[in-house]
Image (cartoon, rainbow, N blue to C red):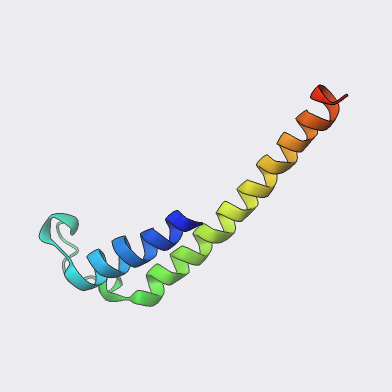
Length: 73
């Protein structure tokens, strides 16, 4: 989850929304409103957090099952 926060604050909000360097902008999308829409990036952050949590729960369950039924017997 820490990486999601860094991605939101540094990469999305600071670089894309505020600084907006020319090398970062896809040609033909210079006037796209999503570049300066903080809510759009926050929504992506929330989706990423949910996805990360679900994957962490899945892998924790698999790890526990391996430990419980294979290693600990």
